[in-house]
Image 1 (cartoon, rainbow, N blue to C red):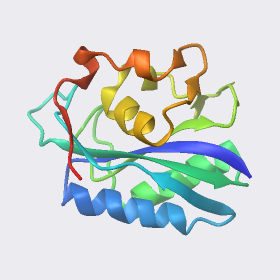
Image 2 (cartoon, helix red, strand yellow):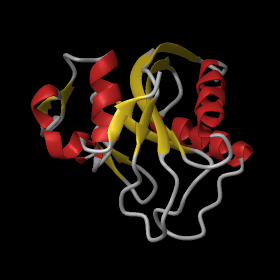
Image 3 (spheres, rainbow, N blue to C red):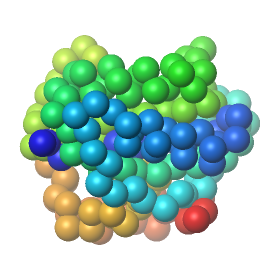
Image 4 (cartoon, rainbow, N blue to C red):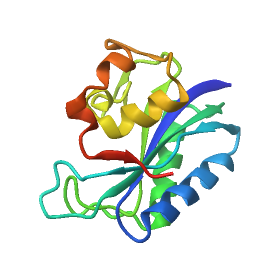
Length: 160
């Protein structure tokens, strides 16, 4: 089994429920086990063109035998079942599932970059990731704690 971390987020159609349903879906993936899940975090939207509702975010640790690409495809299926649409970049969304890390795999393809290229700059990823894996070392960035700056934490609060 390979260790992987998945970020979840929603700001449409009952975001708390959407993230909770996604966590349940992760726990039912074939050849996969949900190991840990963070608390839910309320996050003010960033990089949104229009005024958008706050996001609910979480991070899950899983163990899986699925390959990184198959896991990504499966995460996209979970998004699609939830009703995810992609009308434009950074649009409000029913559900977003991002593969952050997959073991120590470094990958850069058209569809998938591992580790996730922007996770070290996103408080809504770092805070829940730190909650469940405080000793994790991010490739090319080191330990999580020093990355969590006041600027990255701005607009983020634990929801549950």
